[in-house]
Image (cartoon, rainbow, N blue to C red; front, top):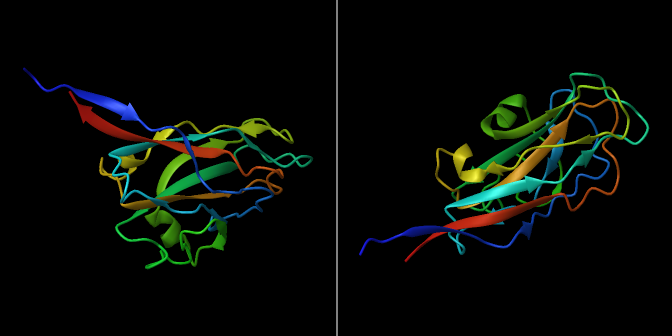
Length: 171
């Protein structure tokens, strides 16, 4: 009898990542990092990250062409042990030392302004974490978000990010 592999998803898990009132960064080096996700006990082969709508500034319209960018980092060790520049695995505002640090992260998604409207909701499509790292799931991973909108993002945006872990089971 042949072994059949079945994909199994965990329940959705919130990612601690509060982007409320996040200020703008023309170079995308200033932004916010999420708390790190430790994959060493769950041993997921992938994680599907979903993002609820991100709301722009309540009263200031961004300029067409500006973006919200979401990056993902991966590491073989916890950032509490070995930070990536200022990224330490704790949900907090951060300013990377230079653009080359930003370029070492993986761009997971971007939402570009196509209509200059205040309080518009922007969407980043779900993405696979492992696919960003050559199909291999990092032991530790997290997110970094930055934008270059004219004003800060809207307030009250602390529960927008979650993931479902993926495993294969055999029968």
